[in-house]
Length: 315
Image 1 (tube, rainbow, N blue to C red):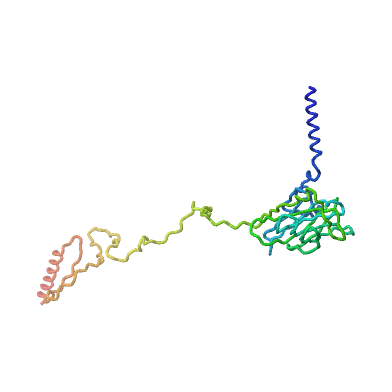
Image 2: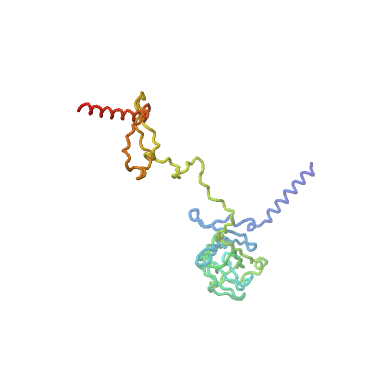
């Protein structure tokens, strides 16, 4: 039992010792830092905990800005003393301090923080000068022993992602408005790194590969087909008299003769001229369903004989 208590006590002491070894600069991360007020807050797309000098970098890279890409940043670091300076730079020529295009912030005699640009050409001396990157805006804030540089740079045009050499440094004093040389400790020699800027331009649309979804088909259900035009099968109109017209209803068929039928277009041709010479005129024939033509012809001859006899006896 006593050995178990000693084991847990030793474990608690070990955890406490490790927690005391962690410095405040390491325990703090860039995500906990805010800029501005609650009403007007400045935010950045990316932040990094830099590996030396207790520094942090917040930035937003806009590769689609016109006419050239822009880099908006906030560099945060404590100067080596309250009257010291901080610097952040891009080096287009190498990874060290020489050749870097630096933004240096410090407090003037009035106590206000300023940012000045320096083209670092040597370690011996520096002088305020323009830098190779166009500086669109710059300002500095000093609060709680920490200096913050705010700036927007215009970078050269580039395609895709960009990698730049960044350098940062801190110093302890400013003499006659000029930053004095910094210390040469371990952190001062490793305060360099690579800044990776990811393109924010939209990717070009991909060419169609034929696998795109087809347009929605129109509904083909329950839709009535359009009316069909006449194709020649329409019933023909009634034909005029052609001989096939049905006869009118027959009258009483006692012994009366049926009404004469209409000509059906089959009238016989007239007899030839030679057969009509000295021929008596044809005797009209009545059509009868019960009297034959022979009986009708005999009756007419008898009638003619009687007429002749009457004329004879009258004389």
